Length: 436
Ligand code: PMP
Image (cartoon, rainbow, N blue to C red; front, side, top):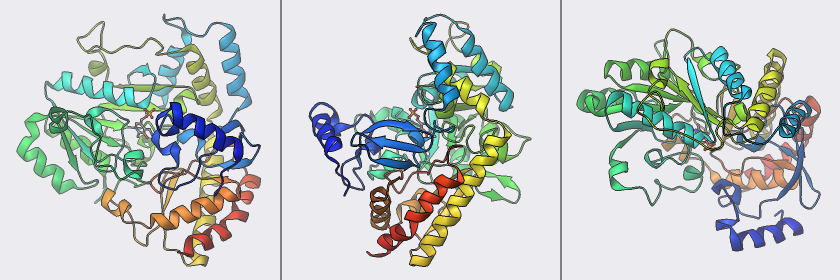
């Protein structure tokens, strides 16, 4: 077990003054055990912990670091912005740049507002949807995570899945009553719900491709993708579709998962985060101009933020977008594909049941034989095998997401040399996974 001394010392201190020693639950290594390394610095695909140990990083700050850590262009842009002031609480050009870039890449986004996290983005999109429809109920899918919004925590993915929590304490019964949870991909269940309660439903919210219970690509039935089906079903019921691209946005493809889903349909509202802030705290929600026009001050829906559209965050986001050209996506695709093949080979050789699922450049590894289509499937995997695999890799200097329910994140800094380093560690880790 990696319990390097300075990290251990820091973790002990942290646990006294920070709940569980962390500011976001999955970081605590609660489901895999052991002490999380405290990170002192990061560069490209590598992390260095407080004890000077180096790791190949496959977490990428859970998505934002798509150009690698401390990318020189991004760092320079932030440094330059910092010399011009850290926050104005007044409009600045970078906000316009981000909104234009998102609108240019993502057809359904006519207008965009910046916030400070993905949680704020989904919370605000939901408020707009409720105001637009005059209805209260929201439909979400089990295993999808949309941040820690009260109404959206029921059967959520990410840390809620990692720690096998049904939802969260502290959410009122009234809020829980306004949330209906359906199995992911279940068209019949949605159709039945809409037939019965369609008039109460403000919005259906979904991850564009679920990636917080591991990656589950939206199923296509008779040529109709699940997201398109959701949009058409919502609209027939007078409800809206909110497509959450906080994780998939500008990662699954240049146009997010929407770019993979095919055209000819559109969500009404979309949410973003992670990549668009290049590692600084940013989220965004956007969509149809008539809906976004409901926001204050022009409209009746209040939504605001002292630091929203922060100039450092928009500088990091714009520099990240500038680096996300065709060559970058080609590099992400080849790193992701190579890694999937290596993991599959190592686990197959060691005789470890597994299935790898992908959505564009995003992928995850489930420790079970069969395809994962729902949250129930995702939960039915061998998390002990994952735990052994995780620790063997960590010992060898490979830092995976510390949960069997998370996507693996590569960056443009995951060059063939970096992938080779992972390749060297995989066979022993696969044998450790097998040795149950
Ligand atoms: N939606 C999705 C799909 C996410 O993956 C996340 C975070 N992992 C969020 C929303 C919440 O974003 P944040 O952590 O920035 O609040």
